[in-house]
Image (tube, rainbow, N blue to C red; front, side, top):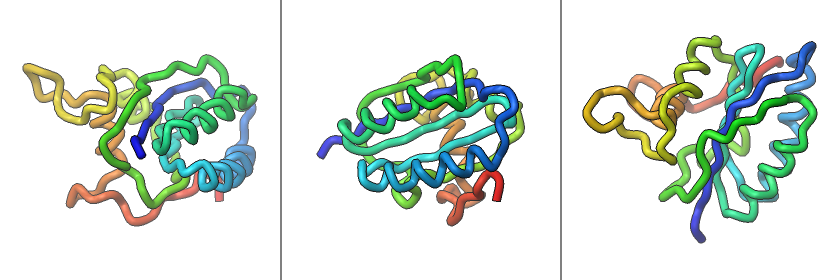
Length: 151
């Protein structure tokens, strides 16, 4: 079955608490498992950046939930399309708090689909490359466990 993915960035509503995010994440984990979707969510206190992957119908279902969520505004899709393999196969939705500069580096980099190599003619990673780098350890392997945002 072909895999698809979506990456987006959005602004958190004013006054959002980490406990609100934790509740949403708990619901998302169950929904994503049923939809066959895995991925990651980053939050810098003001903005979200999320990437998720799975079968196209599952990704579409998750994206509809995300799009209709009231915890954020100004959703901007960074990339959408097919992927060759899952990049986050173990996490129905891992989450991490990040500093604003790290999130900005990912969101503001050029996004050329889900390519992770440097931009042609340079050594600057594309957005997806920065996203993968944020979730990998020194060895280049995905970190074994994700941190929840508020708990």
